[in-house]
Image (cartoon, rainbow over all chains, first blue to last red; front, side, top):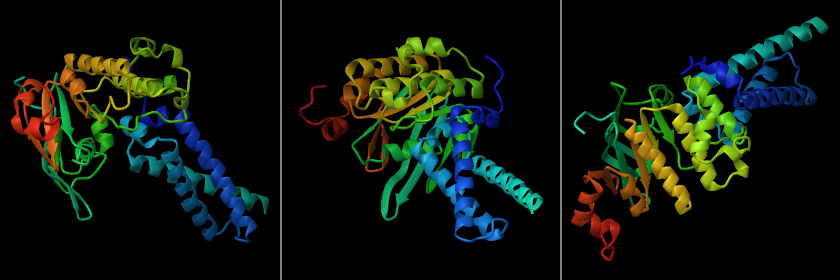
Length: 105
Length: 237
């Protein structure tokens, strides 16, 4: 028996976590692109809200499609921690994105 | 067995809309025992096992596991405490190979022995394949390998032998018996009476959302009501 690694580290460094992270980032970029294309300012609350909600919805679909919910349950990953991590990650992405926009302006 | 159950789902009730699926149903799992949860389709077996695993919320009743009592148990907490739930749809995600699944279990719970488990279950040749390339039996054996790697205290397996060849059913049965011999409490559901009776120490019969504890497989064969209503009157026993 070796020492168990922290759950978040195990998930993020596994193909399952990496797949979700890549999906989330691609969806986030795509949705920002859609918002900008239809004329919503990229640094507005409307844009951020739309991107956050839609990215979470796409991740929920991906969790079901990739059959990850049962696997994560076996690993002891709660839904609250999973969605909490997703919201925090997307929040950080959003802050970095806005800072980058401010610098460019 | 004289010691108390490892897991008890006690007096569980559950309705979906107006359809009352469970009525004060009780399921327990004892260390070193295999419990067969049997019943017709729609009798509530899967609902009860999901509630016991924390995957579904009961309307009333409680789950006892790991020395604690939960009215609304969470699957992640029960899993952390050593409960392993194997759904009838399997555990394999399309995002990884069999080895990835076993590796993530090893790293999460600090266990080892991927190659040995794969060899034991005849999975060595498919370790680096993704689930869609595996047969149904290989997928089920991969679920079992995950279970072995986890080293759980209690296993809840929903229809682990459904749709498998006789050879694969034997492998599944032997793996579950081995777990029980090591002190793990095992609950399985299913319909194949011969397979379940071969592996079980105790039979719980579900009828219309209520459970009946009818003892060992030998005692179940002598239970007139069980034989008449479940096995069928013409069945040799």
